[in-house]
Length: 195
Image (cartoon, rainbow, N blue to C red; front, side, top):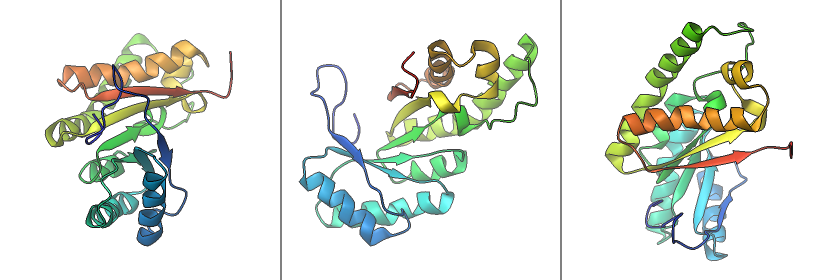
């Protein structure tokens, strides 16, 4: 469930879109979201690249609900776990990218030993677990969205630029979530390379 909208399983295919305005423009964000909902959009995604943007989701969601618009909101997060933690307080679903949630592309280590790889997985667990626990506590859904173009150095080193790398990147995060008894997540994977 994303808010009151069932997804997956026997549920119908859902229409989702994303607004294009600056998240700090509260009035425009509310207006675009309402336009999408009125056009039949069932879930709306809003980017929250900073903690400040994520905090403004409170005002956006409040404005929507005051206007009778109950469409679930998804916060689109890149690079900043702190933004995800803030966004989870206000929206029904948080989208994170495993390739840049706790990692950045540095290529400082060109070949990971098994010990280094395990240490990186533990570091990810430490960064990701607080969000998982908060989403579980608040009843929020999560989208683990892997992008072919933003696989972590660790994944690129072990799996290369491959579909298997994309899958493993998502599964690393799913394993952490499941270990913490959190199961309200979906996967998405996108690639500009059809092979």
